[in-house]
Amino acid sequence: MSRKVRTQTPKLKRTRPPVTIHPEAALVSVEQASTIAGIGRAHGYELVKAGIIPTVRLGRKLRVNRAELLDLIRRNRLTTEPVARAAR
Image (tube, rainbow, N blue to C red):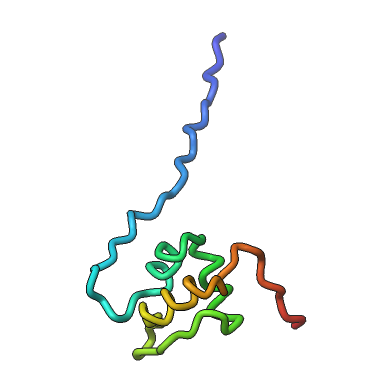
């Protein structure tokens, strides 16, 4: 008697669509700011939480002032090193 062998379908890695950034936008999302700075999305949110990247809250959305972000990058204040997590 032959037995059916179940094969698992490979799980596809979820990918995010590319981030589009309007060239004249004064405020950008944290995800867009992370792309501009050349860091990962999660690291961008860590820097926001640590207060390194200043944000503006518009309703429920966090926005980053593009001019301030570019100034931070120019002054070389953004780093790709992990942010120290505060004790809970």
